[in-house]
Image (cartoon, rainbow, N blue to C red; front, side):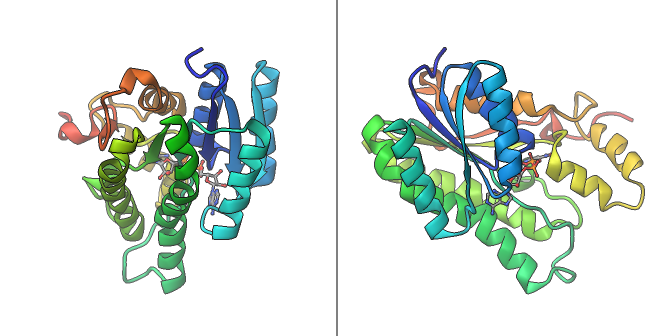
Length: 256
Ligand SMILES: NC(=O)c1ccc[n+]([C@@H]2O[C@H](COP(=O)([O-])OP(=O)(O)OC[C@H]3O[C@@H](n4cnc5c(N)ncnc54)[C@H](O)[C@@H]3O)[C@@H](O)[C@H]2O)c1
């Protein structure tokens, strides 16, 4: 129960990796704020947490909107008085080259994926400073190793790794740690969207597994355990880090 009596906010926790993070933090005793633009998804996550005996609230949030994020902060403080960790996980992915990506699609990825990290961090930092809390940003192996036809998405994930380091050095002396996680392919919404964008989604899913040394894609829970570690006191001397949780994706191509 590492997070007993602590409050953890997870954005994009109405599904996928964010939901797994919310469940893991709740299972470790946290009061979890499930923030998602998809309110039904957020409510479903809260129901799963409640059924397991945990504590959580759902807050409809658009992380790309300053007013929406400020409302999220207010509801969090109103419900739980303090906040100890923020997991910036919400993102979208457009599976296109630069040439095929519209300006609107480009801007949407920037404002949700990077702008969301900026806005949530900006408005939660005063509260995280009080508790000497921590921020965990969801980046991707695509911040180091890019793949075809997701140019804008890869750019946003690299930006998150840079922003993580910038926030780590700006807020380290205040006791706030900031890290990011770089998952490989994980069995969740964005990877599924990528598979579906390929000519043969089943083949694409199978081939994706083989890009990892472990010859399989990961599970959302395997990323959630890393988020739990980084947000906990077990990681008290870890800040500015990009933690790779990629089944060996970045180690090189495994033998055929
Ligand atoms: N699935 C993968 O293979 C993979 C790999 C590396 C990194 N990641 C990262 O993990 C995170 C979660 O991905 P996932 O695969 O679980 O995706 P997902 O689509 O299952 O979850 C993303 C969630 O974000 C929410 N969201 C979208 N726009 C939002 C907005 N404007 N405001 C608030 N919430 C919003 C969605 O409603 C959804 O619930 C993302 O940051 C993604 O880049 C995923």
